[in-house]
Image (tube, rainbow, N blue to C red; front, side, top):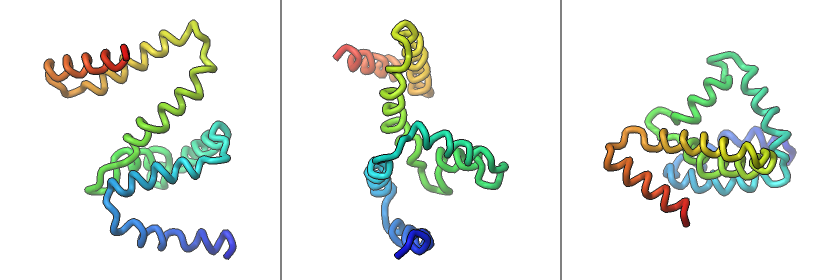
Length: 144
């Protein structure tokens, strides 16, 4: 079977394969597949090419804005897996890759800004008591 034949079969196979799976099953499978799919690929080279391809499409034609909206908000009635995947896998990986390239003098300001943003967004909508408990938990995890 050649590459084109395999690719033409994918949509039908994917439909059948995922039709009976729960969202949690899909999340688990996707996390495992992403790790395997990235093996041997230089993501520093691949990401700019992917981003340029996505940005070149016009709105409503599968462009960056359309794609990001679908990934972040999910399909109708279904919760998106993307935010959790980005926070658990992609962002920590990016930080591990990029931090060594940032001078030691600039790291404190960068980390302070990132932590402030994370704390602000993560505690959004919480009561004062919930925020206090949340901050205490985060501070405790930083100390250990």
